[in-house]
Length: 248
Image (tube, rainbow, N blue to C red):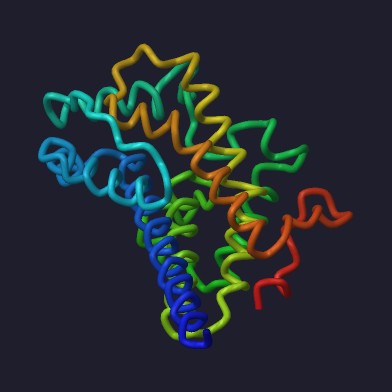
């Protein structure tokens, strides 16, 4: 019985590692897909590598197979669709901004600067300022790409902790808090705005990601809450980030 119990524990442990790695992969792939299109991104779409990697990680977490879509015919077409949705629009503002501070409904009465400082507090606590700078979003910590990369990093730390048989709860709590307070609301808002601006030629694979990612992120949040409890309510200071002591 003891041997059987040990095997069950080891299987559960390996399952947790695999899930952390799959979540990390989806966050990183989504960050690549939602960043400004590069030649490498177009090649990955054309060859189906991006879709295949998403499909593998998506199904590993219980998601449906990734559908097959037509991809943009050229890098220029991929860029034009991206810019028409996420960079251009009326009066110089994007039709669908990718930064949270562009949406008054998300910053809860804070100034954009104060809101971004709260987001940056998460990054600073885990020492990822250099990574954000490397990604080109040093001055936009609330950009969806920066947020996705940060969640990928937390998943990476979680996976390392599990692999080393260390306690992963701090990284899970940080993921839970960040998803609940910042990434899930932003993804949901992007999806809602895109639903009204979907006629400008965004690549079908990117469009599907925009539509599916919010529900996927909510599912990850629920899984994390099952592991480490519900996200605590914000402190009395409006919009304040969760207590950093919870992540230590």
